[in-house]
Amino acid sequence: MITHASLLTAWFAVAVATFPFLFTATAPYGKFVRAGWGPFIDGNVGWATQEVVSPIFFWLGHTRGDAIFDDLTHRTPASGYARALPWVFTAHYVYRALIYPATRRMSRTTAATVCAAVGFNVINGALIGAELAHGSAKPNDAQIIAGAVIMACGAALNIWHDTLLARLRARRASGAYVVPTGGLFNLVACPHYLGESIEWIGFAILTAPARSTAVFAFWTFANLFPRAVATRAYYRRRFGARAFPDRIRAMIPFIA
Image (cartoon, rainbow, N blue to C red; front, side, top):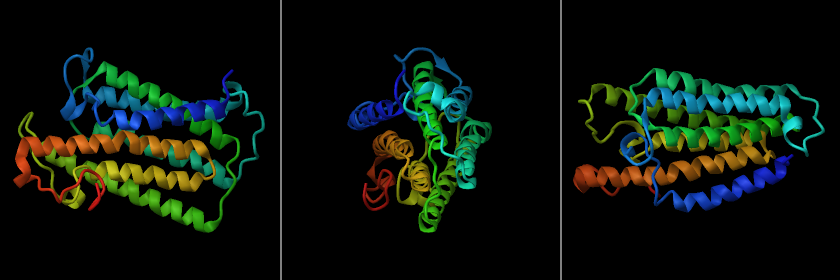
């Protein structure tokens, strides 16, 4: 059997290698969907399918991690804090897998994209679930407060700007894209991506010194920042610099 430590190390190495590659190859879904990636499928169905996998494999790793990974043989007695963390993780995916696709009309996606996302979520879910079941000591109060505040702010940013996009999509003519405005859209092209990245940084702080949650936070940024850069370039090409000026950055206000 594979060990948790070796898989996590390899998974982090893949993230580091993938990050620069994603600046040259944007995943084919949403505004970037295109032919040549296999059959198309309904966007709402595809999204729900790929996202629900993460909590399923999180709980599989959490309850059966010692049967999956050779090096997870000692289970630390769970504190109340440790027992709460899985539900924090699960709450995010209640939104992402159920509420998010149920409250908006999503563009079609490709089967290849969904399959890749399923594999991604299987690995992350299992790694995080297994590690949190085998050593989630309660950190100091300052770490808990910082992690909770950062995660809550990230989640709020993500949901707020997802909602703004959904309202915009509901009003627009079929197939027409417009420059989103309101909230941090006046500063960056993808504030919802910024929010999700901040959210998982907060979770990594809440669960430190767990390594898998830190790797997942990096993966989230590595996936979303290049897509935000591509989204900014898309808006600039489609609407011009006058409608989408230089001051509007890709994902991080005033920086990038």
